[in-house]
Image (cartoon, rainbow, N blue to C red; front, side, top):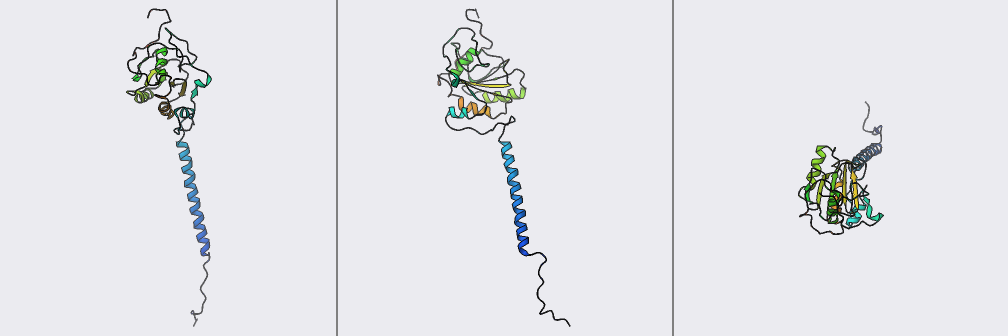
Length: 224
């Protein structure tokens, strides 16, 4: 008869510490994989279709505008005239961001225009602190509706088509401009939030009471 009472216990084929180490390694790999996937998800989610970072800027309104990718500051390139001028004005930017303008401003109390407006009157509105959003006439209906929803009924905002501009959508404040490709670009809201009621030498002057007429102005000295 075999005496099993004095038989030493058999050692496991794989030490316990090896199982523990293997489990920890697997857990670390899983955690790293999840963290990596989350990083790329958040990174890609924080970019616009054009690849620009979609993070709301902070600071003063000037600092906010400076922090938005694609914003051009024309005030850094020289001052803009505030003189009134009769008739049509030739502007160096299309759409314009400031300079000589008509004595009558364009109504900018959340006005949505379905036809082009006079740049000279729109620039007067910019002087009062308005933001003017323009779009090419060939912009899709969905984008136009989205822009109208951002503007309609909001003081110191106006929207109109602008034939000939080089980008589908352009935003103008006094001395500042941002051009984008689609209405879902988050920089539109960043620009509006920073510039509206801020960028303009006559901030606080009214937007209501201006003209709602559309169409270009005739040259100076020509009967309207």
